Image 1 (cartoon, rainbow, N blue to C red):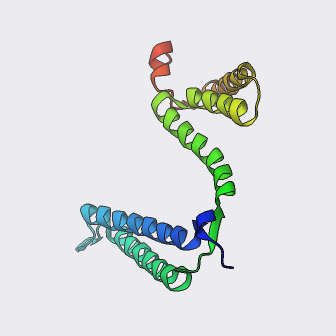
Image 2: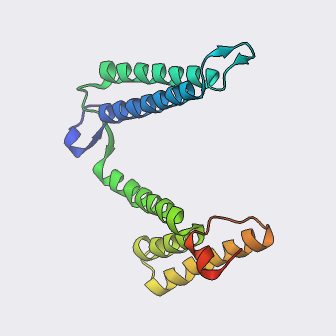
Image 3: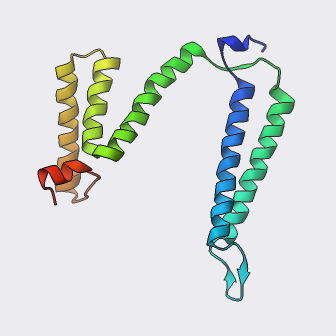
Amino acid sequence: MRENSANGLSRFAMETGVALLTGAFGIAVAYGSIEAGAGWTEMGPDAGYFPFYIGLLIVFGSAMNLVYAVVKHRGSGEIFVDMARFKVVLGFLLPLVAFAAVSTLLGLYVGTALYIAGTMTFQGKYKWWAGLAAGMGVALFFFVIFEIGFKVPLLKGPVEAFFGIY
C-alpha cells in the first residue's frame, strides 16, 4: 500500500513518535526509581528496584519498536491516517483536552457544563441556550448524585470557595 504522504500522517512518523514517547516514559520511570532507591539493601529491594527494571524494559521495547519502524516503514509512504479523518479525530480530541484543562482549573462541574454546552453548540449544531441549559443540567445532576447522594466530593476548584461549599 503505497500512497502519497502529503495526504496525511505517515505510518513511519506515527510509529517513530510513539516509540520515542514510550521510550521517554520508560526513562522517566527508571530515573524516578533511581531517586527512590533502585538498589538492594540488607532488608531486600529498595522501593524503586522493580520499577527501575520495568522502566528499562519499556525503554528496550521502545527501542525495538523504533528499529522496526525504521527497517519496515521508512520510505514506504504508507498512510497512518488521512487528513480528513484526522480532522474528525481532532474535533473530538481537542474539546476533551480543553475539558481536562478547564476541569483542573475550575473544577469538574464547571468543566462538564462547558464541555456539554460547547459540544452541543459547535458539533451538534444546537442553539447556544439549549446547549448551555443541557450542560448546566448535567453538571447539576452530577452534583446531586455525587455530592449529595454518594457523599463523594469531587474537584470543585474556585467554585467551592465562591459558593462556600464545605
